[in-house]
Image 1 (cartoon, rainbow, N blue to C red):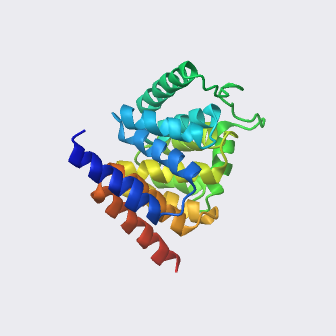
Image 2 (image 1 turned 120 degrees about the vertical axis):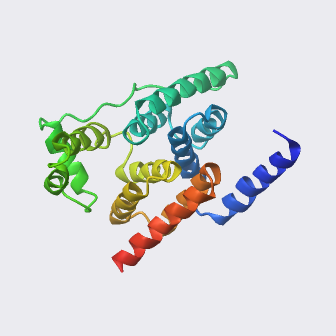
Length: 234
């Protein structure tokens, strides 16, 4: 990286941005990691922030879980790329004498005896934005299976898993959607995050932090989405 660009990058990201936000160092690393996975083709930066996440207290299992969640938003290939980078990082750290706890293996969904649709519906409704029946009704004339897949896979298979709490899951979802510029979906999850008790200031911080990597247009679009949601809630 040219020296002038390096100077501006370090000064802006690690100086101005980091000093302007109140997210904990631990949460900064996880949301950045999620945003980078969603952006794709960011292996070098992802390597840095996986190391940062491990060093700040996230376990390899929790990082795996965040990467698995990205399959919902940026697709399965992005999760695979993330897992491959995590594998490389763990190997590099082991060679340097750093022992990271990798057990238990990737945490599985809690068994409830309920169908995936039932589990997903309950998980979706915790966000208090839309219920499962309304979501299915909204898409039944266009793609009857779409809402069912969203509820069963996104909310039933993935977001109900116990390795990360729901607030953390919504924070990394907002990071991914900011990076992708998915404004409509972002507004939905901003509503859900606020309903789960995540402060609007933390959401704004996630947007600024991820936007430093994904660019000012995505940062501006996500900030406008947050502004619209806050105005609607008033």
